[in-house]
Length: 430
Image 1 (tube, rainbow, N blue to C red):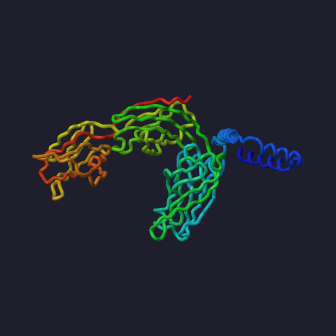
Image 2 (image 1 turned 90 degrees about the horizontal axis):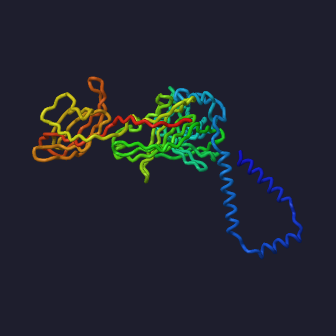
Image 3 (image 1 turned 135 degrees about the horizontal axis):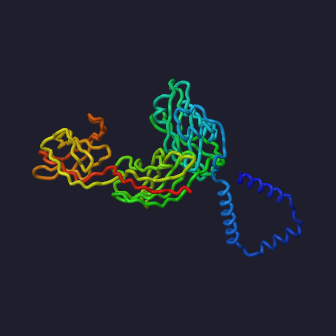
């Protein structure tokens, strides 16, 4: 609105200036003075820089997200794929209707029904429809990829979709990184399949009103660092908006990627209860690995907030020497974790040992000892998750060694696993 008012004022000033006519004699004197005056390019450039910076900060202050400033219309037909916070916000009409559409290569219509936006994310609601039917090629390969605009290049992060029983319509939602509050027009980019098994990129322009976005309800710098077995985790900030709560940080943990779902063990406790985790992402950088963890929205009445590293990637040195002379069905204890030897065989390709462990365990420094030598692990194949007779889920895989000699012992230096830390960090809410 500030930009629109500014443009209107400038137009009025220009019209006023154009209507003023100087006397001919005055005009000649001014031309002569300007011709003989020394050039002051540097001062002119500096003054415009000051004006530009001042204008930028004025616009910045006026263009912040407005908390719950807009009550629109509810988006219908998406109740089956949204729940929790997004469903509540949709019921209140906390979004922007779009209604833009375009036709894909096979005649299917893509309609952007609406969106909901705040300082943590932008969620797009869309529909694919074709009365002749939507084939599997399109449903399997079509994807919304990113949003571009002024100071905006937001990547897709995750979503859900659902096809109707007649296979003529798909409704979906997709979350993107937050867009700039300076953007008024956005381009939504998508990929669609062609008949020759190739993919092509398309886009659709959609309007965006930053004044109808929602602001962060709670934002705070954290600067909290915690040690784990193989490094440190630093939490930089927490931003709670109407749609989600995001924690950002960096980590330098050597074995972070050796254990699945490490971030799943970091809990956000609000009023003594865990906030539902919605996802996480991480990216390598020069200063370490950047990460963000996304949780559900915080409760309206917030009395206490706590970050708990309940579990995270850990490491335990073992130096185990397991005899392979006889195999039984019982587990072998690995400092609180369990290992099962399922099968040992020798083929023309080498020695294969099928094992099972707890699902969070990755063995480290594995080798095979024969009567004459120690053979390092060549590769691991056929990893699957199975259930034991007692119902416990275990991770089963086959270890391959480049040897045809009779195996005597399986050597294990250590293991990576999800270790219990229970480290708590209080976040002030006052």
